[in-house]
Length: 297
Image (cartoon, rainbow, N blue to C red; front, side):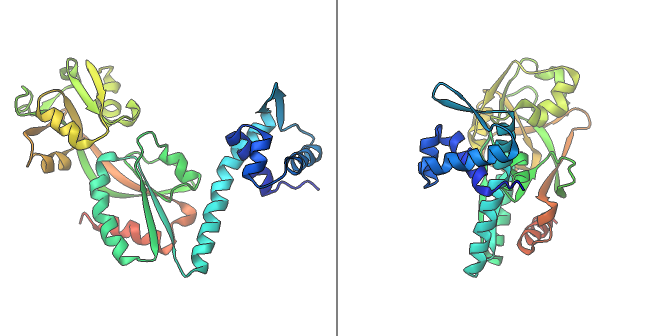
């Protein structure tokens, strides 16, 4: 009978990361001969080749690439489960990792995490807000436990709960000619400099829900990571941006900025929290979802 073991997954991940069998063996605290023997035995049992050699370099075959993809998915789950078991053995409850796909929502999230940490002192909490972070894939791969997103995906493995509604608006300075407009149309932005977060355009509401559907764009797009710097540039009339109306209202107390509706009916959005179906009934995850939903009532 053929057996695929965890060590095979760890080996193929280590070889990809370290670049050679020797370095991979060292990282796994194995001898190179033991590592080679383990893979050779698996290849003999399965009747496939895992790697092919080109010079001194190893490259996965089609079968090896499939095994590598499986390892990328399963090893984080092994590590997470082990971590949780250790936490249980120490009397701890768990780890809650939150991935952000709504970068302006970080301030709102802080109001939830502050009270949640007081209510659940035995739960460790981490927020991942990297801009080029594939949060949906990370949720499916068990690298995070909750996702904050305006764009839920229909997958049977995932569950999404709505948290709050918001309107995405154009943000202009007090000197901008559009500041007194009831709304703008896509063609009105053709000569504008648009400040955005450094993510793909199809993940930015002003493109996906306003400009792109009618084949319009802006004169130039400038990427800025920090919301407040973005607001400061807009206030100095160096360009425009698009943010949730509630956020603009908060910043307008300190900066001369004005919200303008995107189109006659506006761009209406909703923020969701997503979790894996298998984890939806875990008490500390369920508590976070309930606390988030009640925070805006």
